[in-house]
Length: 281
Image (cartoon, rainbow, N blue to C red; front, side):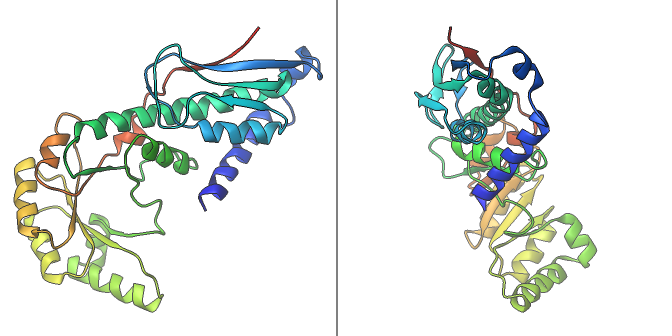
């Protein structure tokens, strides 16, 4: 599914950008002109999207010769050359913006993720992404989180049961939501993990009394309440903290003993990393 989604994104992006032709390049550059360009790093961070960039280049022109010097997940610094690409100049110019858009955004996400992951060094707690992603390119953003050292939460609504506040309220309560979920999974022969969100200790106790789930999300709990909740759960279920957690409070929550902390800002509040694709004259 991953490869299928990536290929769909590339096809859609090429159609969006090129349409019936890159008329500027077609007008300015002879069709037989051959050239070479290099990806120049202009900001320190973690590189991500190199493999996707190669797919884009090859989709536009399978005759490109690409030499890679830095791979996905490696640390980069100002002035580094990540790769060179050689081939028809018209094809290089067609691929340029799409390749940069992917690399800059993915590298920004990977670099941000690396900062969060580094903050938890020495602790068991893992950093998770969320579904707060850019529509239609979620797979790229989640891949960037993984490259940056984080872990992926569910991909979408289809690969995990996640009972949140609105599900609980519409279902009529926690026990009703959980029991309906178990019945649904059995009737449809689905083997999906179940996570449920709790907003306070009353809801936590209701979950513990109903039981038979996989993970409890502690939503908008304070650090002190998180520590208390983890003690109450006592390892019976995986635990996840979420809601309003920043880089400044991240380690405090992790020290409470939660297994995961989900951070929406990994993908929806991102500054792209500064990269440039320049011709080699």
